[in-house]
Image (cartoon, rainbow, N blue to C red):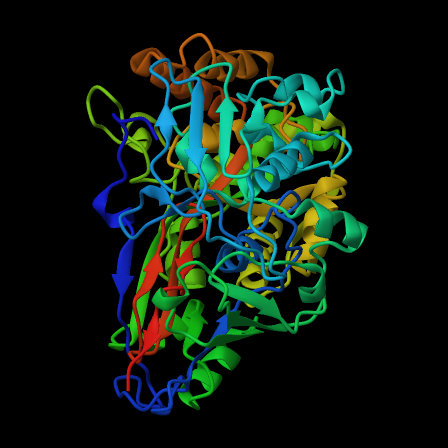
Length: 550
């Protein structure tokens, strides 16, 4: 994160203390499902909105899996309660050269893997080489592009051994960059940059990270009882963790609950310590003292498949955006504290280095709810396309929230734009990610949560060669501006900011996506569970320093 950038207070990391309801009276509190029986056992029962996809640091892409991976494996740095990257496996703050091109860190000598092996510098070198190896197919490999030789390796032109990440013995590592990267410390705290035990990974082969038996931990918990596809798993305290004396919880028992009503019933029955709320249930619990709302640096949007001949028509894309009433969507369909968003970036995320203005304040909302105009555009699009009707496949996750969103958007389009048929395909997240990767969709309900506090983290997504550009959007002028912001103007805050603002304008002029909302998450939380750390970027929550009070 550039020194001139800042996260607004509303997105800073906070400690949350919440309360629990036990019956239909939404204002009452009761005993918790968490365990503290006086014998020292501390167990939390947690719900997750979706299943885990993988625990391979190089292949992980979804936030839910990252959230739990962050409890099992630690990188050189971690994000603290103030939202700053601080030493984890690193023994100190490290040494950064004056030109910003080399980062050197000493490693802790008391960090070990759960099989007893020491955590060494080679574990990081191996993991980074695996990340950029084109044979891995890692979607997050682009984050390493400023490391020496990484672009050439990813293009298959240079051997992975030439990557600018070197071990200086077992307990020192150096990263050599080709250009200053102001947010590099945040990357060192991100899951894609976490270490892997080479001998264990190679022993597991393709099975690595696909079950709890095929994973080693070096963090506060180990992952147990996960078979790779199941809807339950456990985090158990890792007694070999270097800071085990700071970890109070003995275990976190997790179960996937996709329906908010089911989650609430479990919570009120004292069987879980949290419950995700959406829609009408949020309204029912609006005044409940147990409710916690976390605003996120995360946007939800619709992505187009640019291979679809119909969707290459700009008027059709604009018409689709104009019939979605986002005010109704956030207040009636969701009702969970999420807010309307007029562009690609969330509010209260990054600010102008000169004026301090929010990025979103300098970008005008480019789509509004205007059914009449949408219908005019659809008529013009039909003439240009030579059709009277079209059918589009709409892909999204199969959790209750995604289903509600999908059905609402389907209704808005079909009711207001006669002749357009929307076929819904709501599938488990792992399947949705696979459909997105294979571009097997026409319209994709997707979203992005910030990995680090810099606008480029969002703007990179629609770069033509980005692995996250599932729809295949391409604009040469846009690419040139992103390249300029990352190279020529990388050290000029004002010019870089102007590049990114101009690039955003190109996205909106092209109607390259449909913005839906900035996400907030509403949960019921148990007051007995104290010290949960919430982050606005990267791993969203941290239970490693939480505890259960009597």
